[in-house]
Image (tube, rainbow, N blue to C red; front, side, top):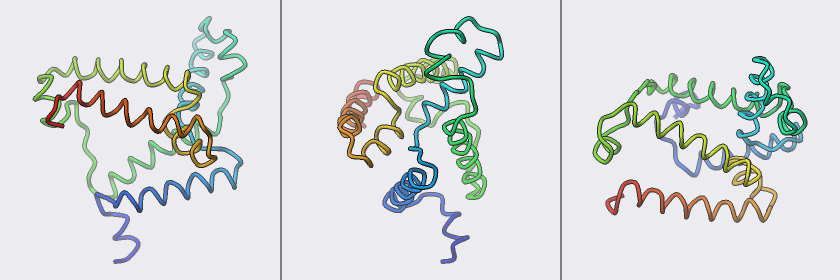
Length: 176
């Protein structure tokens, strides 16, 4: 199978995807001396927007010194991830814009789009806040941290899987 055909496969082997992600993380570290992580990009975008709209939060110590309003490597990485996912879905002819998830969500929570979008928004806030407390997001701690054998990265991986399993069991019950 040619490279072009392999790239169009809708579902990749997790092993192949994991190896490529690992190579990407190592290349990022070696070539630009930066580890991959996306929560910093979101916070940098927030900082830029706060400054742009003259919010008083832009003058806080955090957004002034910790996450100043500059175009950072994390913003470029974040935008690249979005463009890469979009390109991949278009290339494999798998792109769909959905307002509502498949049967799994509807079966447990009902068909309300407002409920779904509210849960997504609240979940996003919790994840971003938690990433700040933990010192990084899933890609920053789990991938880059583990690659460097950071104790925080290793502890985060265990916590990620344990909390994911518990949350899934609470939300969806025993059948998942």
